[in-house]
Length: 233
Ligand code: NAD
Image (cartoon, rainbow, N blue to C red; front, top):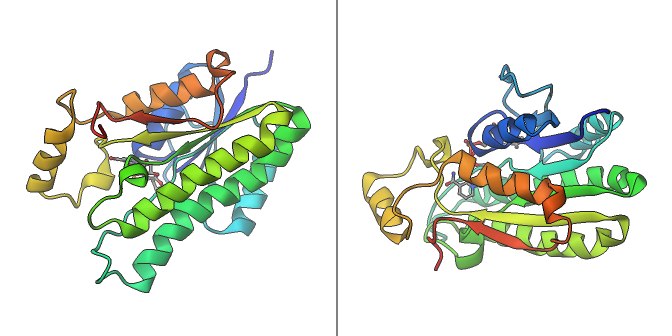
């Protein structure tokens, strides 16, 4: 039997690499779309150097990968360009919207025809609790992530008749290099919100993604699952 095939955007590091590793462990053949060219991890079986905000690059890469089958798409690539709204530049606003929201749309639009054709598929979009609650200094990021949640629900409605599920994960604070710019004070403040008393790991998020892609989650669509140790409540 041929293995199921998954494509993970931003899969070269952080949460994305955690997802790649877990899906590979679960028996998937895993491809990655990432602006990063370093992809020498054992779990990555296919890699294309793609900026998800560029629809032409996305269309070409997803068509190439999906020729061999496409069962799962995980939209994980994301960036931050934090600033208070009154100081935020056009560039900081636009870059985050382009990668974190338009990038998700570009990848879904390219992948869905292959899933329709196969009459099966799972899409998991990585949003954020800050797309649900807002965050000081993240007007661009929380707007993009809130957009991802609206997009997830819309695509769930559009694709259900093709046996495709579309869900989102909203992580809280997870230990990756995206947190590098964070001050000690910000870390302590975030930690004080997390009921389970620790910062999350990439495996915490990957486990929820793997579940949503599995047969066990076949009746779940249009859902947003927080993976945040209780940080949101
Ligand atoms: P990260 O910076 O460690 O990894 C992001 C990956 O995306 C990198 O491999 C990077 O090269 C890739 N990437 C960036 N821009 C890209 C583009 N234009 N096209 C293709 N690839 C691109 O970040 P992370 O913490 O692993 O974040 C992964 C996702 O999880 C993001 O969507 C982020 O918003 C979300 N998230 C992270 C946290 C957290 O606390 N770490 C919390 C909530 C949500």
